Amino acid sequence: MRKYLVLALLLLLCYLLQASVLPAVAFGGIMPNLLIIFVASCGFMNGEICGLVTGFICGLLVDIFGGDVIGFYALVYMITGYINGMFQRVFYPEDIKLPLILILGSDVGYGFLCYCLLFLLRSRLDIGFYVFRVILPEAVYTIVIAFAVYPLLLLIHKKLEAYEKGSKE
Image 1 (cartoon, rainbow, N blue to C red):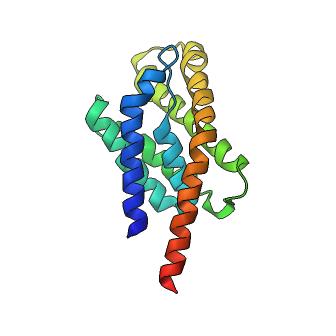
Image 2: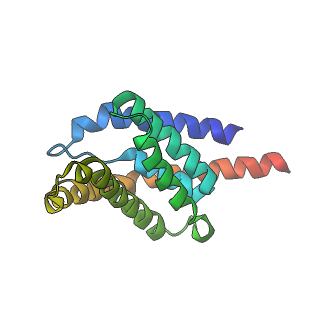
């Protein structure tokens, strides 16, 4: 129960930072996606179901407070969390390469999915512009922030796992 409470508080903190602080540090309208970092981390640390639920709640928050359509970002973040959850079997806390690659891939996939569903279907076909001006800069910015945020999420995950093991014995 404590684990889910901490995850809920972290989710709320990440959303509040994403909505209030990160726009102030945006470069050319591009800001890091802290929610992708959180959803991907929850997925590969805790499994598909946790990634799915975390993604749904993060996406729903984005939809309610800033989206045009309720459910679009919830679906995108759910897919992201579920796919990252499939990598739980090969996740080792000591190895930072896999999580950073998954976070980078998640952000690129998120950007491409948003392009396809929000722009391509409206006949805005300039994918090169969107890739080089939005998707890749956001992915680079997100991965730079992930170098600082991911170790904190990993530390919290280890503490929660140790607490759960201690309370079961």
